[in-house]
Length: 125
Image (cartoon, rainbow, N blue to C red):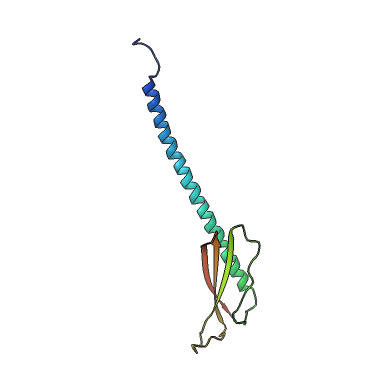
């Protein structure tokens, strides 16, 4: 029996265990990569939506109402929402809440209830 060729049961079990460890590592790396790709996709989409909303606000006529409101973009992807906050600035320094012709626009994009992107800009009369 000394000259028989082949693998013993112990060698087969060790080989299977080694393959299992390698496969688990590869599957873990694929899962992490997939999660990172999804996160990056959400952030990129949110940033693009925020920039699109800001450009949309900048192209609308200056709103003198109190409080000022600007229309929001429509046709958002599922689970995304856009909000636009307008803050009246006081460049004249008179301390009044009247519109001095300068508004700070803050656009926030949420994904699944969590803020994914926020940008700020100014709108001048």
